[in-house]
Length: 62
Image 1 (cartoon, helix red, strand yellow):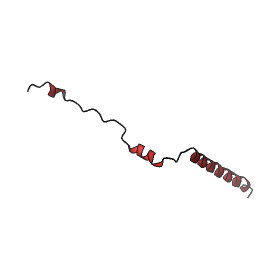
Image 2 (tube, helix red, strand yellow; image 1 turned 180 degrees about the vertical axis):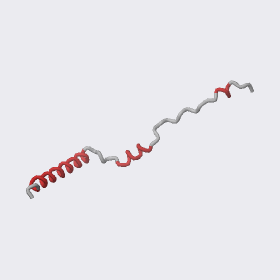
Image 3 (cartoon, one colour; image 1 turned 60 degrees about the vertical axis):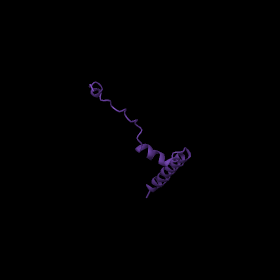
Image 4 (cartoon, helix red, strand yellow; image 1 turned 45 degrees about the vertical axis):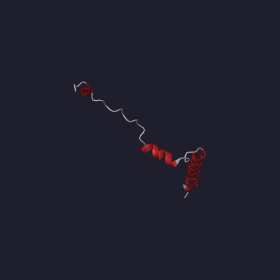
């Protein structure tokens, strides 16, 4: 039972640290744009490659 004297304040302190971190993340804007990160993960940001030119077709006589 003596261990509860240490564990209860430790649990309360860790809970307050977690709550403080959550409130800090709310204040700093971590949750402002919830859908933007999801769309950026699936967006195709790579530009399309230029169409390849068949150089053999350019030099064939007609």
